[in-house]
Image 1 (cartoon, rainbow, N blue to C red):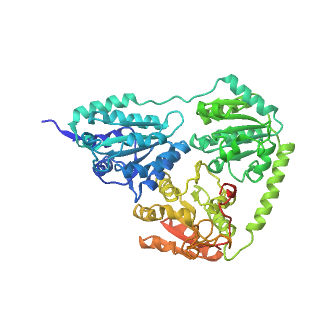
Image 2: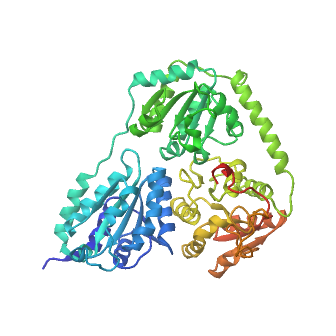
Image 3: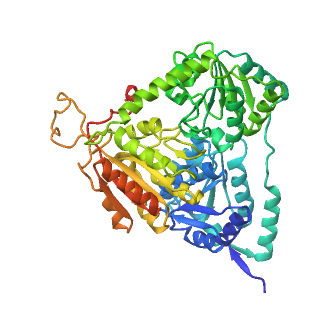
Length: 565
């Protein structure tokens, strides 16, 4: 007699067959059995308290590994909560697949348990979505979502698994046949490269430029382009500017790093080679007055639509690593290098030195009660003291993230995760968990504002449960931006005696949340206390929360985005 298996087993078999090793999510009706079967088949399932954090973890896992991060949710509200992660993957262009159970197909439109047209709900946030309407469609649907997530410009995809389909059965031999057929459908794209004539134009533009600049972002990080980038920078002597998550592809402390002279670099350059970074708000849309009105952009992007949207002087559609390889080859055949005494390199270098020395003078002061700079300097030095492999730094918050971006030094690629293209708050603990799972050899250090931490703070229990090497540092200044910042004219009306919309409980004991689950908690307010807590927690490589008490009047409202608020 033939052996039968159900949709849960077939889905789990499909995932393992097509290379999935990790899954993030929250179980419940109708997907608990699917999660259990996935674990049985050798997939590591990381169970969260909230689909939002699990989704953020799946999206970051996709970025860190280059393989789709998988999020499993229940139907209806679980799917809606998961949209936070799916949309985050879409906006940041990271490969991710959200899998949600859904209500029984025969009861569609009748108000079934957690009923929702989930295919319609995910449309704005996914590049591809599909529903398996029968058990026999599961392997093909799984292959499709995994393919679409990584093809072309990466992004979020969605797979809908109705309750009735998960309960259907087929024979093992039939399942094997379906899996083999679906495996043949898997597409492994060749890297896209532009024609050599376009590469020659790019090389000529860089060669003739008086004030060239190389800008690179997390697309270059995702594309593992760091080796070719370093070669290009060192071969040509061109200054470079990373976007926040591009930091570390070339060392932040490299002599050609222009981050500390950002305004000069983008304001005066005449040719900008932009690799895996979009000319969006983070780069002032590539427009004056921040950029020179006559600057010539050479844009390298895997997505042709992105290049058409931005209308650069020269667009090179292709994989960042491959395109840079071709540019490097073109330069090697007829080399040029600006040299340290080149007027442009000298101007950028001087500005960097001036700005760094001013910043270091501020950082050198031990300010107590803590401002943002003193603890950030101590954290920077502790992280640098660890050497290689460098920790993954997760950063979110307004002032905390802004100051951290300027002060913390990245020396290795893909070691900074922050609010990203969308400026998403709430990513912190999800990103920590993704980094701990994707890079088990690295310590993970989260530098969080207390507001940012609050979005996902309960996931410290998840850190403890899975014994992840994560140290969460909370900059506690009593609220969003730092508690009550209102003027006396604003403190009026019938609720004037209530807390300000920006304020939290003063002196909140965030460290005890970690202690409640068996992790280590530290309360610090002086340089020595912080140094001791960092030394101990970094050595232990176990889940910890360091609660750093900050002066509530340090920092600015909205961080560096006051003009938007």
